[in-house]
Length: 288
Ligand code: C2E
Ligand code: MG
Ligand code: MG
Ligand code: MG
Image (cartoon, rainbow, N blue to C red; front, side, top):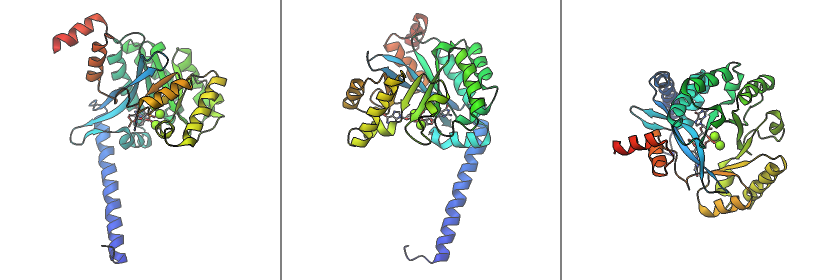
């Protein structure tokens, strides 16, 4: 095979490119139907208060419950949704489902939802989110919105006004994946963040890699100086958790506490810990 002629190799590349385009096109066509059919569903990842060890809430992560492909990860469809403008509907659908599910959960539990930077260009975003909150009865004070740094500030004035409207409602704001991509300390001043999330790549490698550990330490000190609580994502073992607690990280999430899971499994987990409203606990128990 290594001795393929140039011509054959070109033919091979053409074919693989064509297959890739076809696969992407299939996903795009499928995605248009998937949103109204509610095949895009929220999964929930536990967030832990590292000082008390208690569950503080969940990050909401999109999954495509695809009729033939099984569960599709967001990296495979969020970029397509962004390029085609479908992200706005997708995002509101995820929020609606998550708010409906979580409104009976313990009132101390928060939800963090991810927003694409692209969505901040929609001058009506805040109104749309507030409408979903009102319709579902989920309190704004229990909602946090995560924004990644990437290209955050294309249109800074518009992003600031959108974020201002969200914050006026009591919604909190987190800077996601800090330390990666178009990372800049200036971003921290551009929008009124309430929380910094250290990217999981640093957390997952800080055990073996002293540079990662130094970066994590520096970010926690920065959080201290700016009075911004730090969340560490990607905690996979107890020794990393212990180091982060010692560094003063406020919150943690990662596979140590559990994989992101469905609404149904999350309800079970909360029922076991007596973190559902009484009537809901009874309903779950009688269903078993
Ligand atoms: P993210 O917001 O930084 O989410 C964290 C990702 O890290 C999740 O992947 C989560 O499953 C994974 N993760 C958490 N703990 C661990 C760990 O201990 N080890 C490892 N190896 N991974 C861990 P996921 O669910 O595949 O999401 C990927 C990205 O997709 C998210 O990164 C977020 O940027 C984006 N995304 C997910 N849902 C949405 C959504 O509804 N809207 C938008 N705009 N983006 C979303
Ligand atoms: Mg996130
Ligand atoms: Mg993140
Ligand atoms: Mg990410």
